[in-house]
Length: 191
Image (tube, rainbow, N blue to C red; front, side):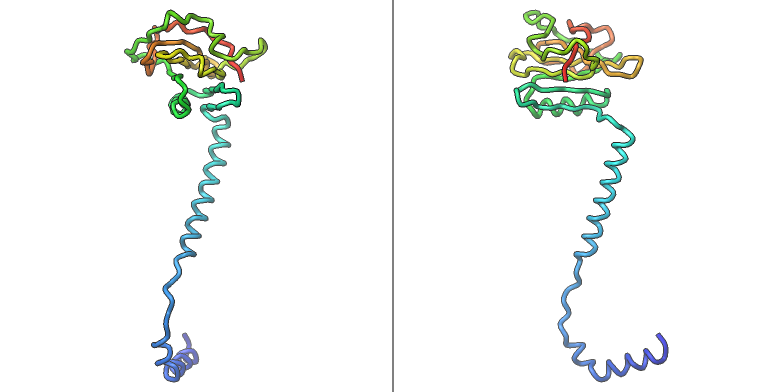
């Protein structure tokens, strides 16, 4: 401050110092920093959502409960298996997605009472369908004591194939390379 401002301040304190000292001061407001922080988080979240959408394109999985009671499961990337399983469990659907793993020691136990084809368990698919990563299942048709296994594998072109198998509980969490749980080969899944 300059000399004039210093003198003005001194005069103000001399004339009104007691009143200023006795005046009630409201507590400092913390709303602005919180609002700014929340706004910053919102902007960061929006940027992340845009980044994920731009960089990933298609989500790794989708599980949709349809109005007719069926459930559509799409696994576009192997990384979506865990999320798809969590969503299926949340919906109470006795279906479990697994991946092939050379180190897997678990053995599936196919239910011989329910051989393939599994048309009674999935929606019919148009013959011209090229979707191999999506299947619409009928959860109420999965027999008690069984689990519908959705075996996923990646083709050389990078596309994920979902194959079906009805196995006795408990369903395996993975499949070894040599496993053949009587899976219906490349079922034509639905949308």
